Length: 224
Length: 275
Image 1 (cartoon, rainbow over the protein chains, first blue to last red):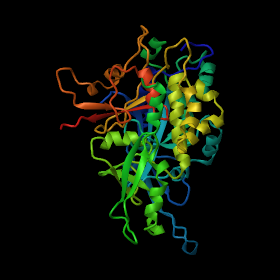
Image 2 (image 1 turned 60 degrees about the vertical axis):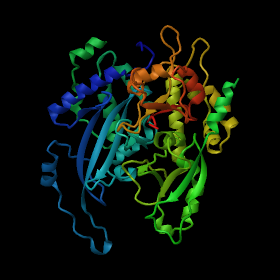
Image 3 (image 1 turned 90 degrees about the horizontal axis):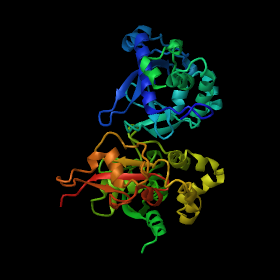
């Protein structure tokens, strides 16, 4: 679509390029993102898995362990379990939760979509409430104000398994507003990074600040 | 000559005779009789099986009853797919009635979405309608409608009210006079043999030269393996609502007349029976 008052629709080719740039930077800083290509149709998605150790009954702090050497980190940093509280009955147990985040492209809406799920190491999935418990309170408030619909469980379009989806119908509205503003200064803003840095924290996914300073590859410029 | 509107009625009122049997490992206080029901092709399992649930819960203890789920020959049935699609994909070439097994325990978390209330079905149904209109009209028609119109679509489906549903749905089937069809066709192609649940891509109903694209054109573009070369035998059937439409059928016509109530064409590619 043309520049001007129209929205900045994200074409699939451009989406793939932005994801490629994100993965390159992720590899540089060890942030764990990778691109997965489907064998049958050649489309694909961004994927990141991280593990979080948390106390079952006590909300954890925001720190997440997303290093590549996850297992080493887990065993090196397991906190001492708190003592039994005796009569109060509140025992805290250490538990490892595996979080998976996928970014797919929606051709119907021409926007990226965030899929996520979490399970304990035995495979038992977490409910949305249980995932919610690990999100910092200030981000929980953001969900109320954000330009998105509620989180629902949906079938992953490539894997066919249940995931939770943050699928904002109004993504393009707010991203366009930001991009219009940045048009003068940052013509090549990475739409995917911009979007992910906004919606990610709401579901426990953080993007280190160094992503913001990404210089686009030559190929992205050539498309403009 | 059959009127096109008759097709709309035939699609809406299609039924599948089904026999529900309780899974043998469920714990019952007395024997559970099978339950027979005519299922609407265009609806969803969890929307039309309240009577099935009540029937089996009568012979079970409360503590043995958790979220209901359905299975056919070992495959959990996705309630969020229309019933007709599930039947065509899994059982179209088997003898009627369709035999479905009912479970109340060990919900298959990795395969099925949860469905704790009718609100979940409504949300899913409306999300599909909205996505279909994003493809057909850049969401203009659905966004111009009032909330009560959205509600009428859902109530029409829930209460099996053809006229009530189509009073609103006809607006979603219109297009500007200067165009010859929708912007893109809402469709999904399913093959039970693949890991990928369905194929969905952008596809225009009208070619650049103005000709109407056909079902065959769609398949060639999006799923060429469904149409085998002329020298080979056709190993698969292309099925919508239990029939095989001619591949020459304009896809715009199919979209207007044979979509499901969610406004999507759900197309099944199934192995052709060898007998």
